[in-house]
Amino acid sequence: MAVTLKFGDKVTVADVRKLQDMEDVVFDREWFEKTYERNQDMYYMFRDLSKSDADHEVIESHHLRYDITRIPPGKLGSEYVKTVGHYHPPVPGTDVSYPEIYQVLDGSATYLLQKVEPGEEDIVLDVAIIKAEKGDLVLIPPGYGHVTINASEKTLEMANWVCRDFSSVYEPIKRLSGAAYFLLKDGFAKNPLYRDIPPIRYLKPLGFDEIGLAFGENMYDLVHKVEKLGFLSAPQDYMGFLAGVL
Ligand SMILES: O=P(O)(O)OC[C@H]1O[C@](O)(CO)[C@@H](O)[C@@H]1O
View (cartoon, rainbow, N blue to C red):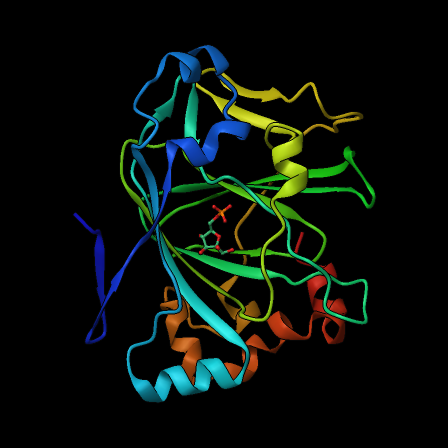
């Protein structure tokens, strides 16, 4: 049965990531090999949401997309459930890749952000972990690949604003069997396929004022002050702000 989300007046059917989609990035290979039910759902992505046609016009004309992702709690063997993970490509004509902003709507999330050497994606320059609870905002700056982990007992629901003009880049994280660290029952473990992995920097979520929201406000409201999201489609014009977030 299709999994749906009612947002505004509209009902959206989820794109579903299945266990088989995670094959390349699961830490616990023994568990994966003996798990025959590869068709089981891992997480649900409700993409390109808007509360009205007028909102959708604003969102689309500003090259934006608002998505909600739902990640039920669970384990991939010894590892906590997570997204596959990806990078974003650079804005055409620049070397600045598209950023993204997340807000936790329910549950709690562990965001892993990693920066690698361009062209040598197994060399890690920086790894940050940001633990976020309901209402918290997390900005993925240009140059950072990211994975979201649900290391809790509750379903995580999170929203994101992102530029709608690009497709995510999955190949480097798949080729390296995941991100630079895996979150296991006993804590973070380094991925041996990467080189020079620095220690994790544990950082805090973004302040609401930094993005023009009142404390605790829902990030969807930025549809009414969409100029605040200009950094998502033209990050090269906002490097002062974006360089300071991590
Ligand atoms: O593409 P992945 O790594 O499965 O992650 C899914 C997440 O990324 C997004 O595509 C946005 O970057 C969301 O729709 C979703 O939260």
